[in-house]
Length: 283
Image (cartoon, rainbow, N blue to C red; front, side, top):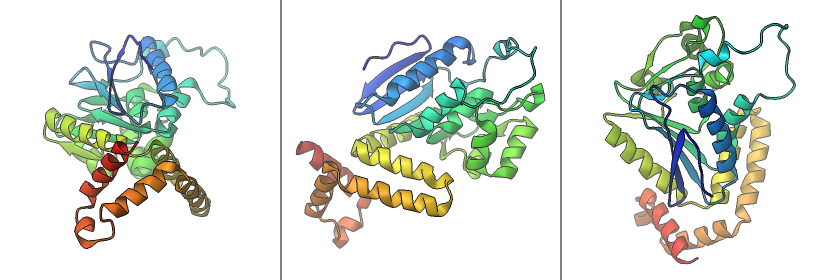
């Protein structure tokens, strides 16, 4: 599938789709970027060739600054607020990256604020740079609140108290704190180290069977259910993976490569790549 968007450039390689966001000068999520993200996430969700999506920025200082406040000021306010029975397009976009059957990773080299931070926090993994990556939910300082999933996503990522600090404080949270709180998976000394690690991780994940990635992600998302419901669903999803050709093939290949022997078990990370390579050669 080819992707053609004004503010998103793409590059596809070995099952990984790199999506570079660029909307000068500071990557504000204007109407055009917002519509591009809605369209892009809708397209990539159904692209079976893609196993991993890596979101990154063409601006070294900003991932996505925030949603366009000038646009928010045009939202109608002449009638009383009404409770919607359906999710907004923004919520659906965020849910799409959270639930799509492929891994979604953010390279957050610079700042992410407001709706940009809400989008990033909806993805599966986030990685940043020491002294450079910063998040800020500034909405309460503007007299509103994070309305693009922030009040629901952040407590699940960092806990209620820290989410309160992020949202009510409307202050910059640095990379070191974000990593300590579990918002960022890891932080690195430089952009080159960030690129090297995330690219390696993305290509590694893309070697695994697509169905296993899809169902494992689905089961991990079920951790938000009550534990018994999540465990029952996990067991059902495990049974589904067990019945795929790729699972039967990879498990047999693993045994051939020495799985369950001391030497092989001591280098499990490397063994997993050998299993994938052998399975790929045997297509």
